[in-house]
Length: 295
Image 1 (cartoon, rainbow, N blue to C red):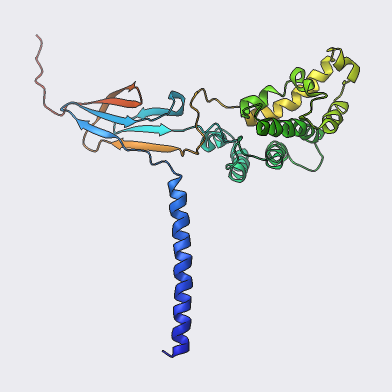
Image 2 (spheres, rainbow, N blue to C red):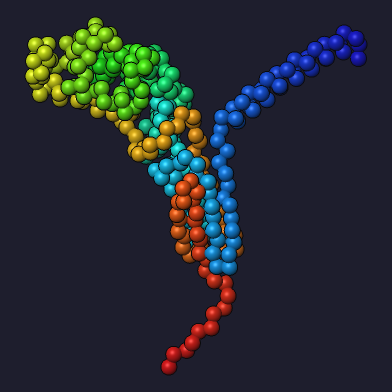
């Protein structure tokens, strides 16, 4: 090999090594964010097996236990309340194939957003893509979509300002509470809300009159029209999570199974003792049992 070729080879090797090290560092950094769920601790008895698992801060609503005659499975579906989408698996499940594909694409684009750090543009984009991309087609065919986005914009800007000023802890629950019409109109003349956007929405709301609003005497048509728009957003902010656990980091879904290769599961019982789960599995006896013949 000539000196020039050798020099180029060394330079290319150095570049390749540098790239490899950067990629490895990124993989290690990513892996550090993933929770390494423990395996079952197993104790074998003559006619039963005891499986123990450290649940940590998991709430009862975040896991379920199933079994058949060959295995016990622990299905973990943790919630991360600070994320706009607290659990990706539950968010995309239970829908038709077409909607599930739209939801998966939506979740992939917005799964990193947090209530504690998202910007006005990010939160507006989150709601706009949901309304136009998931709930219906864009192109102005459905006027309710543009009105729903107009309804949300002043609340979004006000929510971020209030969060950054420390006057509210922004969350899905807090945001939902601002949407009913009786609460929504209290933002009139509020310093944290873009008043022009707010008034533009209300003036475009069928049946709305500013005098009636000031007299707390809004028409039923206002409630009906506004309520319809709120319904389009509620699904996005709805959650069946009942946990009081405060968790900000993303926790992955996991299915942890223990298989019994040479034993048959007859029954299983589970009990939680503080943060530990104990599952007692009873097996069918493989010994011959003498039967008494009755006369």
